[in-house]
Image (cartoon, rainbow, N blue to C red; front, side):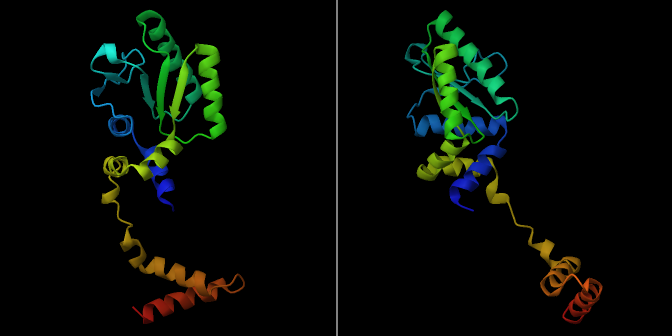
Length: 195
């Protein structure tokens, strides 16, 4: 598995709080925004991240790990962002982080949707883009591995120590479809003799 595919899989598996940590790291290291803080919650007015000084806000930030009904969620968040732009004079630019991969065509369609239906400029950072960025920025890659507890993963080598598993693999390597019963007995005998 390539590094990018592994990172993409890990990004998809992140929970909302874990993904928020990665997005925070992205904003600080890639976009070089040092005074950003996470305000993700139920009543965040579609601002998951804010610049500490309100006069310096140039982009509205959103992040989600919701896989199902993403288009519905995106439209809701863009509607809130449009409301923020009209009522509170916030910028019409939205940077949206999504933990799942999207095709290039889908990203372009969502950008068009944001422009035509909400009069917003959408910058969509999906799982594909974030995984590619993580291959370039070591700090982001390390943060993804850290929050996903990847270093604690062990392949479960004791699984292959089981005599039943060994017998099965012996059967698969020497077996044929016509004499399966014979090969099952043979693999158990071979396993017993070499144990």
